[in-house]
Amino acid sequence: MKKRSALILALLLPAQILLIKLLSSHSAFVEQWYSKGIYPYTSSLMRLGLGFLPFSLGDLLYGLLIIMLIRWVVLRFKQRFKDPKRWILELFATLSLIYACFNLFWGFNYYRLPLHKTLGIDNDYTTEELVELTKHLISRSNELQLAITANDSAKVVMPYSKSGLLEMAVIGYDNVQDDFPELDYRRVSLKRSLYSLPLTYMGFNGYLNPLTNEGQVNTIIVPYKLPTTASHEIGHQLGFAKENEANFLACLSTMNHPDIYFRYSGYTFALGYCLSELFRREPELTNELLKDLNYGITLNYLEVREFWERHQNPFEPVFMMTYNNFLKANNQPEGMRSYSYVVALLVNYYKNRPLEP
Image (cartoon, rainbow, N blue to C red):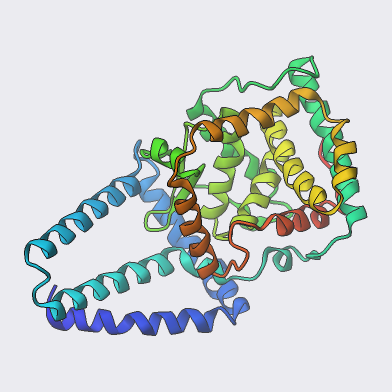
């Protein structure tokens, strides 16, 4: 990298940070000009250009980036970090370039309007409203579990292949576009992550590559969780960067999916959020409501918990803490602990809408 180019790029880094700080206070502008203006075209083009590949180009790029980083560190050590002005300048120039690409291709979505404002619903709710929704979700989850297994004590087992589940996830978004036209997902780029094993030990279900707009799904996880995980990543691809909003969209698309297994996955996913929040407010009442839950659903919840317990490792808290701080730095002050907002969206969205049969 030429010295002049490196200097310009390095100087642009603080300018970019100031721009992000400014945009964080102008969500309506970001919503109109980026999230609903530029982004739908750029993301669609990226998915069109890379969606046909049977592998994840983004994962390969990450691998190449890690190799280059290791090579750079080794060279610096061999040279005993000589000429610090040059390599520090190049380091900041590289960071500036990556930061610019991250924000231009996807990251500005962190600063769009909150989803409840886009939907025109409240973002607050009472415990009584939460209890009512939780009861409805228990009832619907029980009905779906019994319809699938014909035994209220049997866990649901997905009958589809993992690749089939990824392909089917797209259909759920077709059924919610009447209320939410922005959920028009035409060009598919949803792929198995090449790093599913390390993702598992890091504690992640999947991720979106912001540089290629490929949705990466960890296909080692329990198949029962793949419908909501894939739908979550599609939500990110559609421009909803915040984890809690993508989780709500995963609930919405799977609960409205024509396939009963997807609906079961979606309803129990939403129920899990509501039970967690209700337990925080009313633990005794929550324990009473849990008595009405079919044991087969409990087995599916246990299956997921036991899976993650088997893959725990000493470094997982470090990965989670790092990602949590990343979220806080990108306009998500609660980090990964954002259950309440997911529940607020669910309660208020379904306040005047019947839960689908």
